[in-house]
Length: 481
Image (cartoon, rainbow, N blue to C red; front, side, top):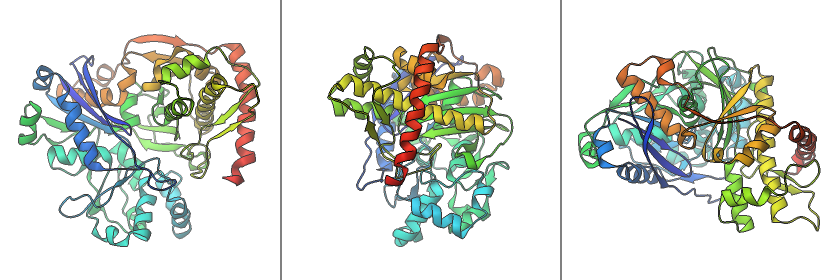
């Protein structure tokens, strides 16, 4: 058996898979996000560790005893700052935190070479501008920093006592030389840091240490290796077999991602598309990211006093896809691809006396779909060739929303077994691949296809016209954000 641990934004997920990669057991433990000021998003790293322990111990004891290796995945970009004693210096600044917009601009002005060298636009979500914000606004904290770790790598430190990361997650810091797959001293120095502040980087299947013996006893496991793992999107891609040129997946988690695997490094910062390492050696990927996807549905449930996302979707379904009607801009936390605008905000538009909860629910579903479609357009504009798209994440479980997404993107969607816990499964598969030394195509074969959703021509036509209004609305409001 093989254990995968995913440190998400809304919770920690643990899974056990067997040698064939089949899901055997899973558990979750919830996490809260702190928003002490507008545009801020933080979590206490100790809360990750408490949730990891809870989610691991919630797995059946017989499966824990059978675990032979562990893989990690997690939310990317989070700045976890430790002093020389490994004490946490401040709450971790998360991937959807937008406070460092000014620092992004200052870094570009001070270091005109930065974007070209990093291969990505400098956005507030990435780790580098977060450290710039700390350096400027919390100088005593910055001076005390001994190590900067990403969320899953803080958990790794607790598990193994080692400072380590993987290529796919490290690429999202904007300090990694993505083409060469090593820390870039020039980029680090531009932010007042050195390679000694960074963990050692490994390829996803490489072992980074062993589970500490006292912890293994508590967890009811043997002392087993912990592999490097991957950032949540790269690990999720592995879970659904997205490893080769042309393979594509869409993740419907807190954020929304369209991820295209590739065999070469292809950067095009002008498109606001991310160009990162994959979690397998000598593989890369490009990806578009919208900051609020399934989280928009959770927000709409609270707004409309609807009990669940499933109930929200059922509320919207009788309204159906139509050309006119209400619009929703899904920028509750700002936006990355294609706008790179941390100040963008959510908007309902086109309301009338006839607008009710069902129409608002439909607008939210369509707005998220339009955001993903704009990300897809950016990917193809950067050179990705995309045919079918595998879907994963908690938002992957609705047939009706699948129809909306397929029509908005005008692509066939593939729904696969186990997609709701994708990153944790991908991390477990990395552990299995490392331990069993299996062939890549065998280790990361796509799971069983449950459903294929093809775009309906009427829906494509209706949403295509509506998406033009969606795009125009953002452009009209951009200066108002």
